[in-house]
Image (tube, rainbow, N blue to C red):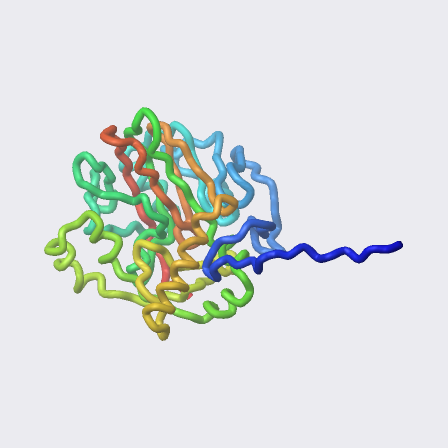
Length: 308
């Protein structure tokens, strides 16, 4: 006697279309066809699969030779954020290191350090928060190419910074989402990001200097050719040509991609540590979990080009 198996009755599975999904993720650190060569002039220790590497054996207060500068440049393109322990740079040395990659930009919306192009972050002096996933100054026509950040004072615990690889984030979007956003443009505005901690009358003074701008939702890295998701929760307000509700829903989905742990690296600071990141290819998040303790950081930003 034979029996026929009865299929198990299962409710129809349903997850909202703008959710995040478990399962395989494609984690490409470099573009297809990229020549992956060893580093010969310093030590490099990866901190995650695709993003973040600690550089060892360099003193950033000493001007790098052309060969060292070029190898660091390659490391930045391949790892997106580089970490240097125990540097304790003066502001002049921090600026001099950043100048190896281009002219420095100023940001009048932020408190200044020892020079107008050194931004100082100290919540005990000027209330600011960066505990939201964002890419710096995308409200500019030419957002920063990169940034060099040094922690001058750290809390006894907490105050880490995370970075997310936005090329990998783009690679892992569903095909139908990639097709929908390729060629789309979005509006970026400084007001939403700064309104969280700046009075309206102060922001109003800068509206003429920083009008809303449009950038591609997916930008192409000018050096590697990688396609990268280029919207962020601080400054991207809407996708051009979509109704508000549709734009908001699509942006929520895109903003969520930075939250995926496989795309991230997390750095635990010590005083004097330096991070140098590619602002074109990443988002970052400063964890505000240190209560009333003091955390003082200084950042130098390198001028960038117009996204395409």
